Image 1 (cartoon, each protein chain N blue to C red):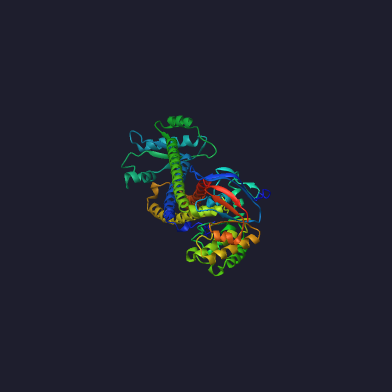
Image 2 (cartoon, chains in turn red, yellow):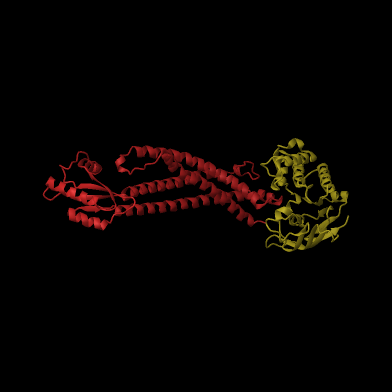
Length: 300
Length: 226
């Protein structure tokens, strides 16, 4: 594939000297775009997965602020929920947990004594049966008027929509980068054809097929793309290491958890790079071939 | 000339470069296999154009050319190289590839024909010895003298044992000694069975060897028997 003996002195021309660097830049941008899309898609999936298996019931504090009344309402709600078909379990979040969840917004040291915080119940749903939300809402209204169900439907739809848009934009970006890379290859190959026109004529006249000549351009261009790809891989590796460092430094409560094992992390980091690397080689090879064959078809 | 062989046949061939004036008009002749011809005529008479038509560097403006029994005008891009491999060409300006060694220049016709490297090594070695360049295998063409470059070009033209060998003014820029040496190489190729056409305006050379002539003058063609 990368035979270095060329009948055409393609590896000595200055016209293609920048091609590996341009391909490297294009590959880097494409891989980074793909990586962002994959990461965002995974996070969105994990996020929606996490919230679609549960609901939150919010019970506002009683108007008179009497703790006994709150406890009675809580008990009634809990009993009503537990009796509903499709409910696998009900967990009442204690005040400390509520305060912990609000900590990024309200700061440390918040307690139910300082603010009239609502009581929160996490309702775990059965995997095999969805509850009737409307029936649940009526039951809760009877048990404790003012109880609110949040089935996270709005969040799920928003996240899914955002993820879909970002994936589409990433795909569009990668397609544009691929087209730009193909254009670079076309210009480089056309320059090579013009520079080596006489030698190409000699090759033709001694019996070389168009494919024989095209193959030389293909091999040379693929080799340039390979070099560019290697540069991109190296820079991408550094970028990923930097990103991992940056993510590890963030407060974990601000990010949804991505519970992946090591090989999955490695796959997540390398798959876009490998995909782009192979894609660039294919683009360089196919574009060079087509460009040469079209140009040669105009000759005798 | 005989019409029977049709090894190389020009039928009412005319030719012009683009929209320019006709360089060749109504050229008709046959070459039988294994013959040797000079192509003569003054400079600008159309010798190079006729040879370019013969080795498929150009298509005729009018008429038909048949090589080895095949109509060349209708050859496809896949078929043309196969026919070209049966033709050895010594270009007027040699057209050696300057970045390749003498060995690789001579090996080129075999490589484009996908001949195996062991066979290439053997044939090219023999050919370079035949033209007296056995010691210059690794030399780049620009380091060789004019006569050596000419012989290298001849070696490249005959390495694939062509059925038709054409040479465009091969003796034009060399002294009499080298010209005689080159003619011996062409005669050797002829003895091996190649049909040879040598373009020249060297009247002494033509007179010395006495082969029949394809003569061009102002685009008009005639045949001068031996």
